[in-house]
Length: 235
Image (cartoon, rainbow, N blue to C red; front, side):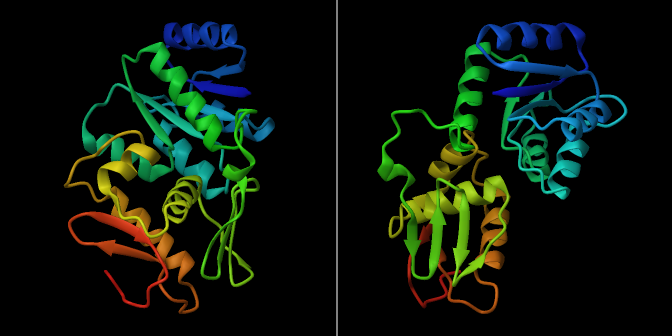
């Protein structure tokens, strides 16, 4: 895997390059957000470790620019900011996961491996059944190609939207509570007052219900969400 490290702290940046290289990653490193965007345009990466607070262009802006350009590279945010609002801001900007500083190297490596698996760098021992096409009514999900179609029309999803939809459809008929979804998708529970999950459910509904198609993602009040073929509007 080719990893781009965007970190303005020289000591942290060099330590990450050494540690990741020892783990077998191909590592490039830059010291600000402008150079990160330039590096990714020159040569795509398989994963980005992105510091939030960087000069010239900050990490949140880098995220937004990449996603606006339809660049779906997995992004793992690194930041000393610990408030829930800061985590939500990073995820809303398009990041896929979040590690607060100071971080434990083993945890960082584990989160990188998890993102790699979710992004298609699956382990060789993953069973073929895990990559079988998923269906729910006229919705089709191809996990191997990470493609989504409904009634023969392609649906363009962000990485987080895709992961959330696949989780729900793979567990069709089972109500998944908020904590379970946060843990599986973001590896962090933002708590009962967070609107982050509801925002992404809204994104998915707009995209999967385009053209007036029946709702497939339903709300179970006070619990969570379920994917099922049900004409009842359970909002």
